[in-house]
Structure formats: C-alpha cells, structure tokens
Length: 296
Image (cartoon, rainbow, N blue to C red; front, side, top):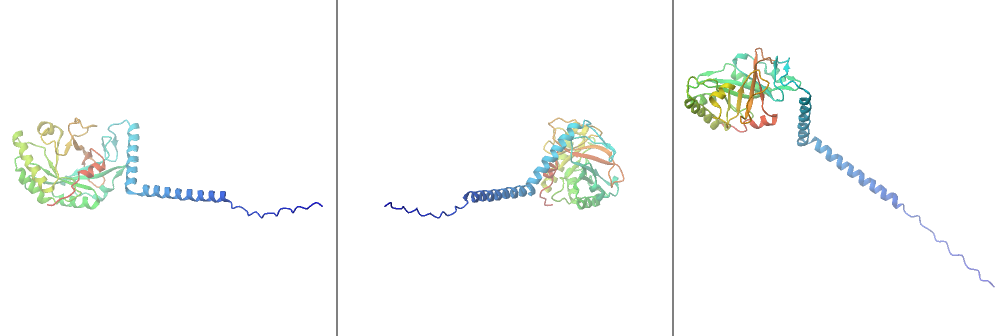
C-alpha cells in the first residue's frame, strides 16, 4: 500500500522591510541638512562686514577699471563744478578760508555727481603769530557736524619763529582723532636763503608733530617746491598746488598725497569759487592718514 507523503507545511513569509526606501530617505535627509548648512554659511559670509566690504571694494574697483577702459578723455569737464577734473582719482576735497564766506556745509556734504563727492576739507586756521581766520571756528565745527573729514592749515611766515607759529596754531586749533594732520602752507621765502628757510620750517614741523603725534602735511606750489623744498622734507606728506593740468608732473620719487588742481570750482553750498583737490589713493588710504590718537 503506497504511503501518502504529507505535503510540506507552508512557511509563512514575513514581508521584508523596504530597506531601499529607508536608505533613500536617509540620504535625502542628509543631503537636505548639508544644503541648509551650506546656505546658512553663504548667508553669514555675504552679510558679514568683512566679506561684504571686500566684495563691495572689488566690485567698485572693477567698475572703475571698465569705466576707465572705455573713457578716453584724460581731463573731462564737469558741468556741475564748472571745471575740468583729472581722471583716475576717486577721493575729492576742497580747501576754504574767510574768502568763501558763510558756507552751507549741509549742502556741501550732500554733493554727489555720479559718485564724485566732497570727502574732505582743509580749512585755514592761522597765519604768522597773530592772525586767526575769521571763519575758522565755524567751518571747523560745521565740517565735523556734517561728516566731512576736516584738516586745519597754517599760513607760514618765513621771518617769524617757526616754534612760535606752531604754538599759535595749536592754541587755535583743537584737533581730534579722525582729523587730517596739521598743514603748514609754505608759499614764500621772504628773501631768506635756503639755509635760513629750511631750519625755521623744520622747527614748526617738529613742534606740531611733538604735540599731535602725527607728521604735518606740507602744502606748497609746484614751482616753489622745485625751487626751495625738493629733497628737504621727503618724510612728510606733500600737498601740491598745480592748476589746470591733466596730470601732476612729478616722478615716482616724489610721494605726493594731495593735489590742488583748480582754484575756480563751483560747489553747492558755497557762494564763491573754491579750490578743488584730489587725494592720491583710495578712501582706505585717506583713513590711514588721519590722526589716530591725540593729547593736546
């Protein structure tokens, strides 16, 4: 008799977990977190002052490069100022005295013609050992109030003591951190020989630097500099007057910082004609030149 074989019992098969789906989900989640982290880092970089300033500076420099590449006029006329202004300088300023009368510094500070602004102003303070400019104190106060970088200058009288002129200037001008260094304006020799003139100027410079802890700026005319001062004060910042020229004709050995290129500019807020200047550098270079600490 044939023995019937029992059919093998069916084994219940448990459905396998969908591991592939889970792995994919896990990968997707990991990818999502990484993307968020990267985006957060990018946002932090973009909005950080260091990164933003660097990007902005690069963008501005690139824009200037392109503009200079396609503009061929080396000495363009600016209708708003009524003068020609030499190209490839981006920090502009003026210098004033009682001659300009009462200035509306709010309007001066608001000047902006295609990016050309009045960033700094030199203000006449004193002359010799007795004369104080009648508008100095007002100009000195108002420039600070309106955010225009200010600097004070003294008109040097060669036959007066350099030390006494320096002390008179320092008694009149209360300089602060953030101001431009003091300026000595040298335009005449008064018949003195170079051997007499140079030591007296040096006395003024030494006294002012001792008090302000900053090297004074020397202002003079192009020809006067060549005739009397060239090679004598090379360690001091130089500000040169040389009008109506597309370029300042100095060699690389003359490290000038300011150029007074016109004496007949029109500026909003000033009734009379005014001197116009450029700074030889960027805004960061001008900031580095300012007085950092002072204890008068």
